[in-house]
Length: 319
Image 1 (spheres, rainbow, N blue to C red):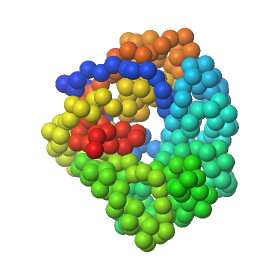
Image 2 (image 1 turned 180 degrees about the vertical axis):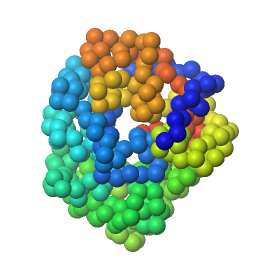
Image 3 (image 1 turned 60 degrees about the vertical axis):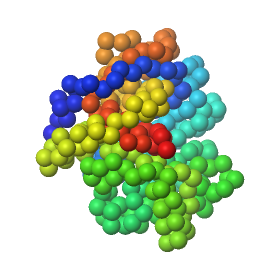
């Protein structure tokens, strides 16, 4: 796989500083039951990295002692971690909002029986990957048969109240472009998703998030192989919108990898861009040091979050 960091480190991206920390985004490991073309984590079934028990316990300690309101759990497929349900239960007992970044097909993996019921019982927000509302496009990006399984999972979640008005169970979907292009306007695409999923499959959801593909890991390597890396970076830079800098996720979120190391965002984590030269480089450091106001490590991939409508873990940044 081609390394993208050497192509990204020389940057003119504007300097950023942190605001108050309100979200702890925890990557439990890179093992996944899928191998997606656009995956910025390079996740897959053969990835061995997994957070140990002590670090999982430290996550809960940090949530409690630092009074962090949101736990955003990701992977890989985070549900494959043996401590996933224990971690979720402990966080909800603290009163934290818990978000599960779910690929949907995980609901049908061996050992995941009752997963949907567990998420509903803990009132976990489900952020579900569904890169299109057509089988052809989804299977092209995520693998044969993924679309049908995803629809079955969405129906199962809907039956439990997810995405239903008044239930309080949030089901949000995530869209990524198939190739090196910016996402279409989020509101317009959300309307199309609602119409198509409801009309053809009876599926409902709360919101659609549109995310730009990051020029790192598997997607970045593919761009290099096809000779498209420079063109994609040019597209991102030409569509830079300074207004997005006020809302990019790294301003109030910190990313934790499976070893407990801290990064300014999940993308920096995948590039190995530690909070180098700063205090607070491990999860335990949050117990003794406030990182508010710290500078954020930036590189050229940051244009992916600031181009067009913007892109973050919560979708588009501007309308």
